[in-house]
View (cartoon, rainbow, N blue to C red):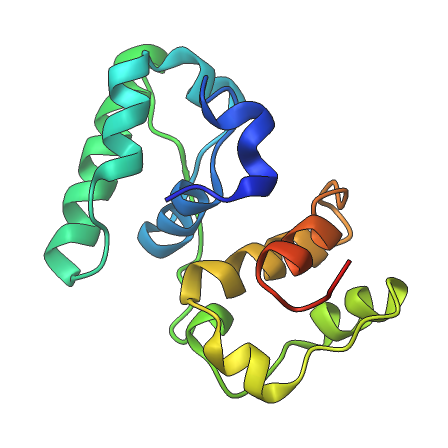
Length: 150
């Protein structure tokens, strides 16, 4: 599943889609964009469609991903700390950085709206609200998720 705000790069998969980024955080791998660019189209597509939900799937995803990175770089990607309770899985608490970012656009996300988002939608908003991230897609994401009206 891809988001509309990813449409400018999703067909070529030249950037790492949110769905894959969530899987990276889930399996604890820090994948650089240069790594992603080294993968061929089939390898990228596999990373998009591979499931990464159960404990076994998470390990399989991590193993496959690290195999690819080692294949192209002769060393694995760095590890990420895996959150025991990732904030995108929490449907009852809106992270403060998302509330603050929404306020920049004079928007408010209600607890009911947050609860009805999917985990990958919440993940996308969390990533897009970080100061270190290019935030041009935050408002389009709010619109796409039905959180603000044009």
